[in-house]
Length: 332
Ligand code: GYE
Image (cartoon, rainbow, N blue to C red; front, top):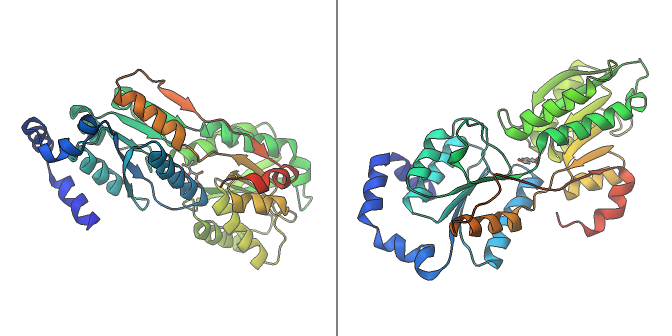
């Protein structure tokens, strides 16, 4: 059903959108925010690839409901073309505001221009787009992924001696990358590389995408372990891939957290549990609870208020001891 609607929407050209807009679709208008004061938001989510994403979706859905915002929600199953189709269908439905978390950084200009031509404000949440034209969106709400990568790199530089688990004077790191072309994958690799450059004993010996999933992390780690028995450290761009790597390491008869150190990003409950058990050594936090800040921004842009072009979320880092302290109170 949904697939059909989306395909139909994508087949409509830009001029057809303009015509519909001029003709005034009364049905859509009567459902829109203007007549009953209720804001309609179209949200195009990446997918359900990780614990982080599940918590993010829940936060958005629960906050929209609490704030009386009519939320139209689609899950793109990790595919950019699905997100583009969803955004086009939101334009056609004349929602008041569009928000989305772009699966990859590039390739958004055309559809964002269509939203702009239809006078529908767009808010980027969680991930950025790589576009020269910043007038295509009102604000970008989310973490600084370069800083997250730097925090992971700083920890490794500080703990380099301890992390040389086989004592050969070198710290061999394998990297489990997030989705290829996604902002958090690009930036977390960059921030990490910048920091570890300070210590010539640390080297990334292999790096491959695990697509931010547990299964992806497990499979890539299995192949890394088969071809290299000198791995000291895993740097995974999210908890889920780190958890997959733990399974692969245990299956290979090694002890995660001891024989091979593990650094991850996110700090979702399963990650924090593994951290408290000493199977992960360090987690850089990335907060998925973007719902309240997103709905706040949406109300402002729909009211025509100026908003900050960049809204950052606040986050920290966790060691195993700190994980034990905060685990019981964590919401996600
Ligand atoms: O770290 C990962 C998810 O974009 C920040 O996407 C998000 C990332 C998050 O799949 O777990």
